Image (cartoon, rainbow, N blue to C red; front, side, top):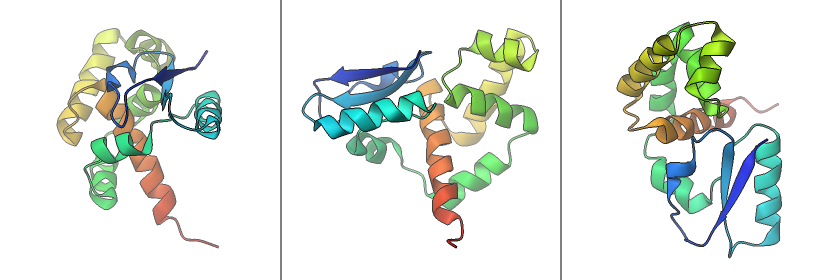
Length: 141
């Protein structure tokens, strides 16, 4: 079941909880009720919800550069990143991908090296930032 945390800090809550299996979002208690509703809807649809100030704080890389980096990942690394971004634990990823836990850790290490991500939480943010950049770059019809 996805979890959305309500925190008191603003604008930059402790992000160490993002990436914990099940935690899909953070909402600041002083935000309007509509923001909480958006966070819950995002979490329920397997997305991630963070306050705008937090996205700005952690999203340091330009979209095209990030996309090029992610496009250089192997198929196995891409699938591993997709599952990390969904909030699965390494053990769950190993089970879904039918590989050893050590293989998942190896792939995550490679992804971190290629992307410059400092930790699992940063990987999740980069994956969602990349998805947003792809949407923004898509032609409008």
